[in-house]
Image (cartoon, rainbow, N blue to C red; front, side):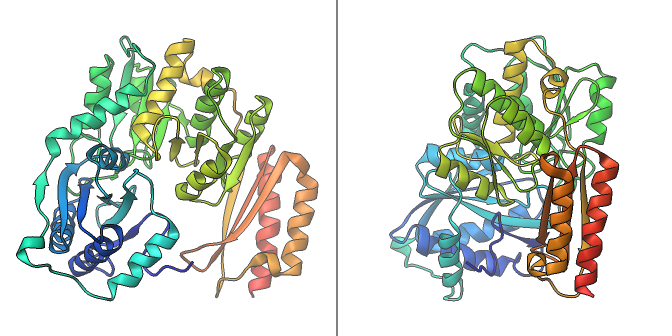
Length: 444
């Protein structure tokens, strides 16, 4: 279903340019209120640390109150924290003001339903159809009320801690935590310190403009130097809104989302707690699929985007899944991707087994992955071109079960993405270049 404003994770864009303007936020709030709480109700609004968050918070608050919806303002809190607190407060829906891993010039608005789940594509389409009907201002007796509930953010910290095994402690563990100068800058350090860890915080001094700037899960280089430099046991890198996780082992090596999913899923399997298949995406490394297969765990692939991973998990009865980027879903613990909860699951495995993060990740060998972007004059479906299909078939036959090809048009720019995986990096690159040449020739 085509949507004009909503992407795979809410509405997002450059601040000051459509749709990320105050007037649009006001209209969006009014439309969402009419769809999600037509007879009044309540909404929780949270945000990350971007300077523009104050502006959009005020616009959304005005739109909801004018439409007769009570507003609870909780301030900076990770996106999954808003999902949890929406359920905790019994709100009809929740709103997060964040552009996730983007820099501060961007911002976004995303919604959760009353159960802390993301809205369906169909419901987002209905909200979009209401935007053109303008804003609503009810009479004084029907207006909503707005209150601040930021002092109750500690409830989310308590929830995160509860996802560890009963009585578990992080005493004796040295952790470097990078919060990307984002939404977790308060709750993250308090969580790990209160659990007994020796904590070294970085990226915990937001100024409104430094979110995701040379720090966090999208830029973990400083963390890679810091962890071995201070002889820490592990490093934890979040993104700006706290739903992506990358970890660093004691040697300074990046442990990405695929490897973390493997660690969690294997531990759940050994504990008899894994249900259904593990779900990744079309871009999940083939090494994850092979490693899980060796453990007797079924693996399924969804479209790129954690909302589609979540949908396939629900469809198949699975409880563990996620993306290479670090969106990790532990549905036996929470309803959405949560970096703090996922990090605690991994650290819990470290404590239970007595093994380092490096040892736990060693069970999954990453396959070399080559991604080439072929620029075209106009996007097209490469699978409909015989010459391209022949090149893909040739490569797939040569790689056999030891490799994989993904060919897809970009959804945001005139580019065809060619991704090839295989055990040998040189062979993999050669195969990717062969397919890219066929795509380029077809586009000429």
